[in-house]
Length: 257
Image 1 (cartoon, one colour):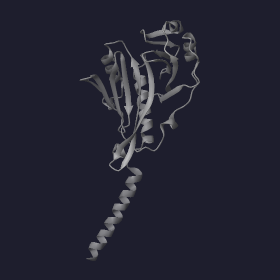
Image 2 (spheres, rainbow, N blue to C red):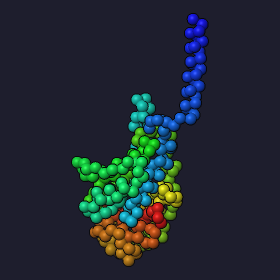
Image 3 (cartoon, rainbow, N blue to C red):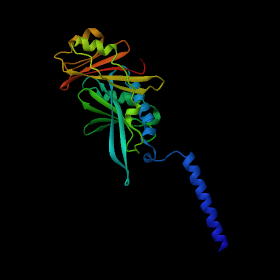
Image 4 (tube, one colour):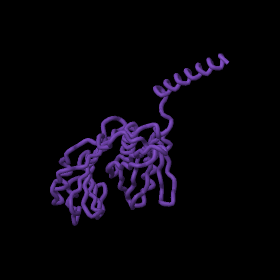
């Protein structure tokens, strides 16, 4: 019986040693083992690649969405983070945009576009259990997102947001529309694949303007619709959106700018 006791002790020591080594050297193998803060750089990098993939289009980064209260395990709550961008295209060309984006993403993401009951859908795997999706949210508007799924919540997303002033391009647009410069702006930034960063600064500009035509002399038009107008002023893409009850302006600088 002594050999059995000795063997049990040796096995226990070996198992403890392997566990100690694995915890310190092996990467997590499931999403629930990676925290929200660990996933944020992957999500941001994925959105940066999406920005690079829509170069030449009218786009804007959208605010991060954090949903709390999801279940990481039956005994632990967590949170999920989604970041992305909206792209404006001519009506009827939404699928063509999704296919161009899929072709421009890394091959190991296995990006593809499939038809669904609600229109074409793009799906890709950015690694580290971060899912990339693309879908049509309105006529001529495509939304591209990267999401963490439910993770242990160990940080506040506000800790990752920079702060920037409105910028001369937005101020010029506001003056042209007869709107005051608001005291606060909403900055959004993601890293570009080749270095640097892509950035959107959003402003709620008050009551909607009767016409966006005063913006036409400010740059080269990219989108010209009655309620949405986008133009380029040098490397900056300015987008005015009057589709809601209030006018919203955004100035974006892409990965090539």
